[in-house]
Image 1 (spheres, chains in turn green, purple):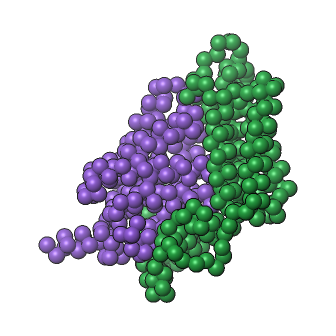
Image 2: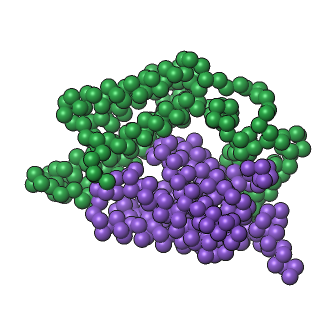
Length: 259
Length: 192
């Protein structure tokens, strides 16, 4: 439960900071170690449906593999050692495999970090915390919250427009082409409906006294407490240890003109 | 920010939410293209990922519309979960800044097709520079990277600029935008 109680802004900034640092590393070992650490932390200190986590993780794994594969095939690294590897019938220089693995694992590291945030953060709390800690203007924040609430509504709206089209004699799309045409036909009614609803929502908010002024009070005050700093300390500390480990074992490679 | 009406903010957020879903839906499309053509596959359709900043700026016509809408769309994508993670938020902000820069160059006065296409191109340039560092394009051969860049520019101009304008104009014709800058322009044109 520890992760759920960390201040959402502190949590988000920590993760963004880590991701930024990881983007400068070019060896596969450091991200791999850090991925394991992130997963362990998420499972130890978070409560959520494990099934969903695994479902998300697998789809991101596929994405990371895609990244690995495209880098491997299209990579430009010259092979001074002349060593080549044969992989699934394709011969590639050994260096390419190294770079590709590190890029693939980097994507996966980003993914596990964002999963940590997603599975342990309440979105409304996050936005409230952004208003109170990062001084996000309430006018924008509440506007966004209202917009975010449209998400489930859009689905029903979509089904309604679809049903309306069917009643008026539009047939079910059979081919890919027809499917695309169907989406084209849906776009304008969906957007128009959403805009109308948004306008009404805004009027309702204002009629109930919302001015967007910054000196408002909060039903749920969000504060940064001393124990919130444990999370960044832990995450950055472990990044330091991982880097130290891979330096010690000679795997470490920092940004060095690879770009 | 005070010149913004709440109505405009909520409509912008809703547009961002809608297009965040569109953006996520296009990720697998991009992935299929990547499967066929390599990393350049994303660049062929990259313009789709700037479209909300062009649409929001074209409809609302206030400083910050392009940047804010793209940022919100990226935030929603992050909140819905995606493989790129929180870095996507920064990517969205950079793309939004790119589009915003084009409108700022016209001092938020011109909203014709040329400006909208320029906004798409600027977003493409900004996002490419960012992607170059983040995704390690340097690992790819120079000619290939150049081809990626050119395709992204074209896609930015055509998909986000031209298609974005067409979508907004179609919306304006339905009359739902009557209290926004674009709708007002339509009314003026009809009156004239």
